[in-house]
Image 1 (cartoon, rainbow, N blue to C red):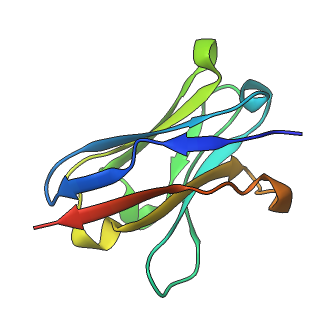
Image 2: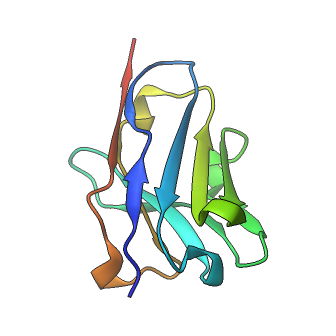
Length: 113
């Protein structure tokens, strides 16, 4: 069983940067990913990282989103640069592919002008 805790969200100005974190036991031995759900929309894939650190970012987010591991802290980070209003939403981490019983509360990101 993996318990995942997301953190790092909050209010950020458009054009700014934000780093989200996902911590939990067992993360280092699993392919992980970030997902997000904007208001009124379905949850969508953002980025993934393999056990060995190979990454992939959703096509329309490349260049602004970066996913990385901290093996020492059993953590996966999501760096968001040049944030846009459409980045507003709840960000979740989960395995890749996601497991239904691993969804946590997520962390809210709100982009302001």
